Amino acid sequence: MIDRETPILDAHELTMWEYAILTAISRAPDQSQRELAASSRRDATRLIRHLDTLSTRGLVRRDTDPGDRRRRVVNLTDAGATTLGSARRAIRRMEDELLAELPVEQRDQLRATLAAAVTLAAPAKSDPQL
Image 1 (cartoon, rainbow, N blue to C red):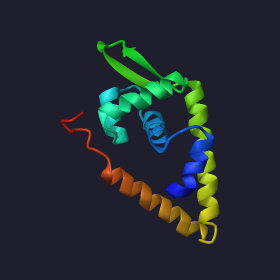
Image 2 (cartoon, rainbow, N blue to C red; image 1 turned 45 degrees about the horizontal axis):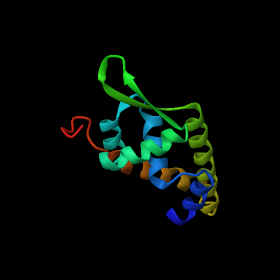
Image 3 (cartoon, one colour; image 1 turned 30 degrees about the vertical axis):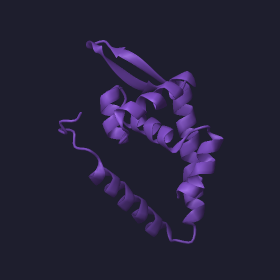
Image 4 (cartoon, helix red, strand yellow; image 1 turned 90 degrees about the horizontal axis):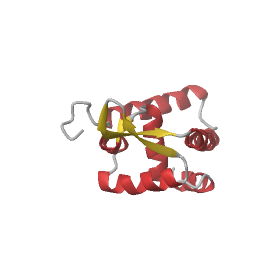
């Protein structure tokens, strides 16, 4: 899958990690950088470099949390949401082409199973590292 996704992400000027980070932000806006590191499964020190790149490109913004001025939250910009949506649609088309030989029910079951596996592997909200 990585070999098939890489050219799609390249066309959207995203790395695999940047795509994962944008996806994590889209699923849970207003995360702190620390929470985002956990939800995207990216080391916090490496995450900062990705956020710097994404911010420079105008895809994300880091704002001061109005409830806690010491805390910074990360959100997608309109351009970030557009880029992510376009990349997602292109990846979904590639997946549909790849799985075209499977009956629709099996494709849907495969996607549901993979989504469940990702959910099970996600860090717990009570994780003290957050």
